[in-house]
Length: 291
Image 1 (cartoon, rainbow, N blue to C red):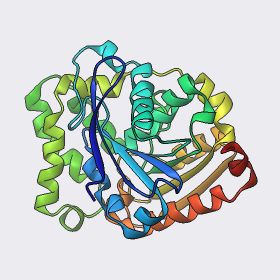
Image 2 (image 1 turned 30 degrees about the horizontal axis):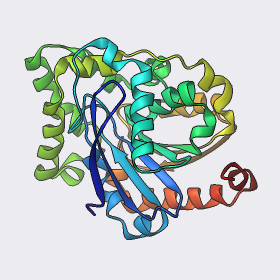
Image 3 (image 1 turned 180 degrees about the horizontal axis):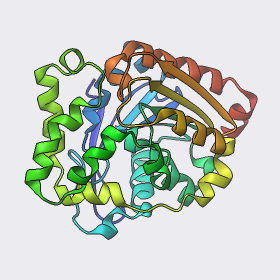
Image 4 (image 1 turned 180 degrees about the vertical axis):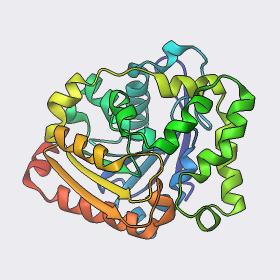
């Protein structure tokens, strides 16, 4: 599964870790993880033989996370930086018009991409597990459990952040004893600890101009894979807002699943992704856009 693993340099000099696996001749998909996480959260997608055979899978770690650089100025987390990071990854692996899989906070990266590069840069968006549609709409879609953790998650005090870390990670799944055995929990805690508290605050408070995305993203197809026991997202509100933006929205509701369908039910999640992408790429407008 090692594939191509590289440390890239974004235009502002920030290092971005990224990896590509799978079949470059098949549809391209870029995976973007959530807050205080790493690309390891997609291991169950990047090790799936059927995914590897039928897709070109690319993942990277957002600035301020994991193996990527962690600059400590607020301006380093401007919207353009996220768009540039995405573009840097696409250029490095010769990714063309990818679908974007956004888990949780990673779901708002398409707003940055559309604002600076336009809707033609991507082929569609897949929101997995309480996708944050945009920074502006994040609060209205935040579950009370997640809202209660926000002050500690945004705190620059390392003690406060440390105290909330385990609760935050365990709240990502519906059944922590099953879905987060200790080795996995420890791995997730490692990703959380790697992020300086001030950087986590910047990641949660950064601004976006979503005007262009709201006005133009309707041409992009969207898939929402959502658990009913998500403690981070008020998913019915989120789905309603998504339908305001995108004309073509398919929703897959997973009963008894929490904020991380790709971890809790990877086989089902992977099947939803594969089937949806196969359907989209057969549509005449998709074929035409690739010419």
